Image 1 (cartoon, one colour):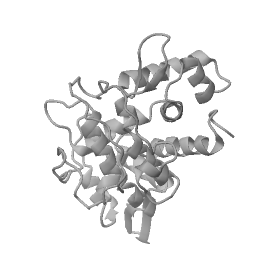
Image 2 (cartoon, one colour; image 1 turned 90 degrees about the vertical axis):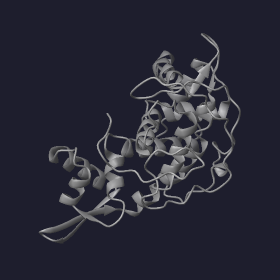
Image 3 (cartoon, helix red, strand yellow; image 1 turned 60 degrees about the vertical axis):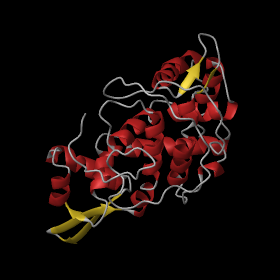
Length: 279
C-alpha cells in the first residue's frame, strides 16, 4: 500500500529509508553497533565498552538490534554466547563517513568540536523527524512546492494543514527554507547537500552495494540553495555552511577504528571511543 502520493518506486524508496533510519537512530544504537565493530564479544565485554549503560538498558537494545538483523547472537555453548555484526550492519559502516562529512559542512560548529559519533547522532535525529524523508524527496523532485501541494503528496487523504508542524520543524532544522508566509518551500543548501547520505542510505536499505551518490535517481543531482543555520541538539552555535558539490566518487572505504573522533577535512578522522555520551 502506498504511503505517499509519490510514484510507486520512489514511495518504496522513501519507506525503506524511513524504516532503516528508525532502526539505527534510537539512542545508543549506533554506539552499540560501533562497540561491536571487530571480533564478536561476550555480553560482559560489550557491557564494558558501553559502561554508562546499565544492564537493564543494554539488554533490550541488543535484543532489538538482533531482531532488526543488525546484530547476530552466536551460542557456542550454553555458557559461551557472543554478539557481533551481521553482514547488514557491516554494510552500514561505509555510510557513516558520509554522514560525518555532511555534518562537518552543514551542522553549526560549537566552541568545542563534536566527536564524529555525536555528529552522526545529531544528523540521524534530523533525518528521523516525522515525514522528513517524504518531504525531502518531494522537494528534491519538485524543486519548490506550496504547503498544500506538499500535503497532497506527502500525506494524501489527510487534512492538508497537518503538513505544517513537520514542515516548520524541517525549516527550524535548516533542511528546508521559504521566503515567508504563503511562499513556496524548497530545500536549503544543507537539505540538498544530503544527497550523498540519502543516496547511500537508500542503497543500504535496499540491500544493494553503495554506489556513487550521482547515480541515485532522485538525489543524483545537487542544485544550489541559500545557506541556512542548522540545528544542534545541545546548544546554539554559529557556522558558515560550506558550498554544496555533487559527489561523483564512491563512498570512502571503511577502515576499522578510523572514524570516530572529531577532525576537520582534509585531515583524516581519528578513532572514536564509544565512551560516555554528552546527552
